[in-house]
Amino acid sequence: NAGVTQTPKFQVLKTGQSMTLQCAQDMNHNSMYWYRQDPGMGLRLIYYSASEGTTDKGEVPNGYNVSRLNKREFSLRLESAAPSQTSVYFCASDGGVLSYEQYFGPGTRLTVT
Amino acid sequence: ELKVEQNPLFLSMQEGKNYTIYCNYSTTSDRLYWYRQDPGKSLESLFVLLSNGAVKQEGRLMASLDTKARLSTLHITAAVHDLSATYFCAALTQGGSEKLVFGKGTKLTVNP
Image 1 (cartoon, each protein chain N blue to C red):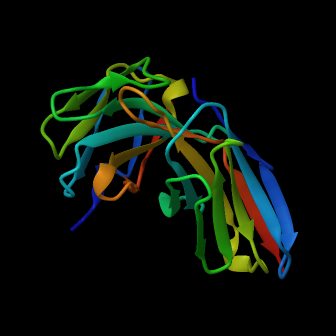
Image 2: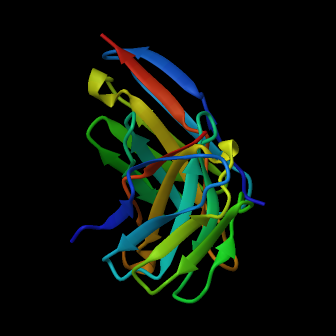
């Protein structure tokens, strides 16, 4: 049981490049989330998916797109990276009424130059 | 719109002392979380508080929830250096799709 996994762990992009951050969970959770963490800002929600086939915007969705490929996987795409997207990105899944816990992945540290 | 405010944002304390971190939230919420984060690491779940008056304890940490006051506290008893970390509270939104709203975190440093 790996919990929530994320790839890659680190990435450096040039401005304008694109990339996809991958997230997978093996706990059969319906809800999955993408957050970004910046110094002094706490975690801010980018996008979330309450169930397979549905996605919704969070607090800071501009510049990002997401795909809920199946129940296990939720990917985050940066189409044209900007320096303002330099951040640590966390994926999470929610156990809902089974556990009331939200489980976090190890994070992806992204630098855009 | 749910907003979560933590204070203090920075806390430096001596080993052996007690202190409390406060978490206020602006609208009704059914679930309040406390997380710990070490530098360069992910978030580790400490407590999930589900009802008014809920109190949970783990070692030197105790969390409580007052839904009427929209306030949760994380009390540290007889602090030790290993408790140095950043602590976040988060509240769950209600109505529609549920999502967590985080406070900005409290960076705790415990000095010998």
